Image (cartoon, rainbow, N blue to C red; front, side):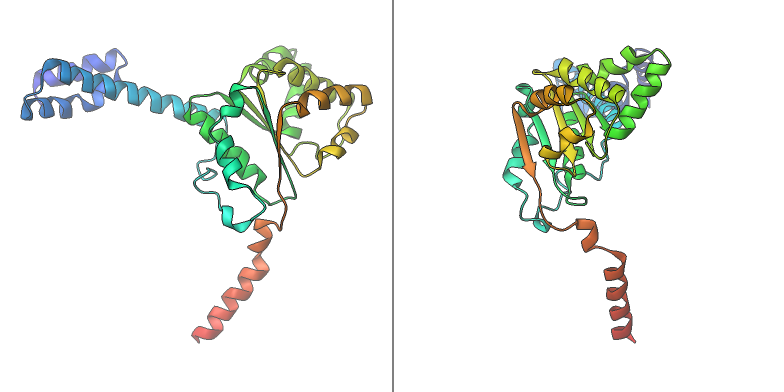
Length: 260
């Protein structure tokens, strides 16, 4: 590396142009070997910087959304459950429903893939550089109660209201108190009808009203949540149950016996 190149890299890093700094030596060699014009060299370097910034932003969004890298649409096994409409899921993964402020419900028994699909859509939204807030429903209520006690509720509610997509996992698992219902209403009402909410639940929608202490508030919430909603009902046996240890142990025992 020449002294000029070393100084160039140092200057690029001081200007926080790490994408260019990481590739400038390679790009200079390409420009020399291929007799590229200065404008071509500059365009390549700027493209490198743009791509690096996009990658960093994606990683920040994925981390913030708790988007597990193993829970993507590419890794979802549609073959294990024929009740899942793969074409509809792939359409939802385009995130066009968010342009219209539509909601999505994944409903069905435990272990049928609801959380995986929710995280897969979160992953796709992050790839489009959209901001996702992802919470287990009961955990979110606990955090909101803590924020309320600490006089920081408004600060906690702001990203929940303003994010491009809010995901509530394991919704309506058990009854909630009046204060929790008011937190939820504040979020849903502020997001309605322009910002999307994705919900996973083991309960059918007809059972949701029973978790709220106030039927009037329950009706108001349900009216907003159910409006413009894609309801995906997933049936079938739990995927985890199919891979239960008892079955795996019996398979391993059979393999061991056959190999003796």
